Length: 396
Image 1 (tube, rainbow, N blue to C red):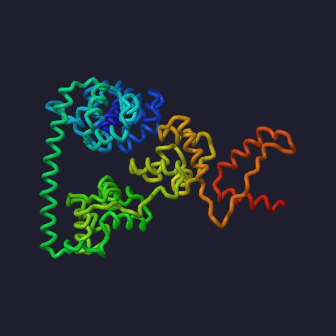
Image 2: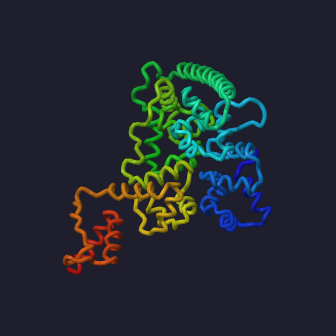
Image 3: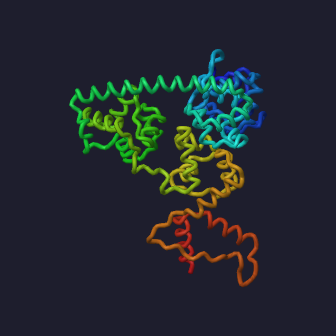
């Protein structure tokens, strides 16, 4: 099954049209097309997906299979044969022009529930399944057959995983790993990885790319404590951590027996809400700062200020680009910015001066220029405000 990125590359080549010209003609934003061409990221907006489908002249069912195969957690939807619940719902959802977010709104089913089903193959409660079937026009017979197939598949996976864990446990005991007492002096694997990433000063995605470890496996390990099962993931992970074979095996066995997430990892603890939202986007799409700047159509310097320092943009055009990139409504984005301003980080040794409105001077309105000046000052972070204060003091 061809992926969406391949189809777009072929289409641009066959029509001899540049990506920018294609974006202008179709109304799809240029950053969205760049994300598709460079990273293979399918557009999130249903209207953009529909524009591409019409350009490529593909029927709805085939289009649904292409979109499913092109997403980050690719799902293969066979053209023939029975479908499990994940395949059935995802195919119907995509064929009718929805994405997970838009379908959650029309169906009143929580977005995390939809994502759990379409991305992870989770099976919701029966009343939720009925609501989904009703909105997608699926019959009870179709849903029952798909649920049965998903449950049978899950039983097989659980049995295989249990057998694998039993074999690993036996191997660990035979090798003299201290399984009985749990190796109290060795942290769990999730904590070891989180600490290593933190000391390296890189993102989880960058750490994974550097050592050839899948981002999803690392993220799952850190946030749930559940270690990877594949040897192709464990071997580069052991090399990246630089641990002895016995220490790594001890940590791995502890994680398998009683997985615990990394307790000290809180990437958004000192970030503004806007900065945290941008970091989530960067990690979800595995972007570098440069790739983010290209995707957002911003300079690398501006992108660095946004991601590393949490600075708020001073230009309306930059705010508009970020709003489109985050796919937020105007009200939601304004709320995010307002919370980010009120969440400004100020050092304890530098008390915040009392805010005195300067839009009125000597009892009269100071005019639009003063108002604009107030707005500009309010956008500055504490460090920038302190610099302006010192500059003003030189004139007093």
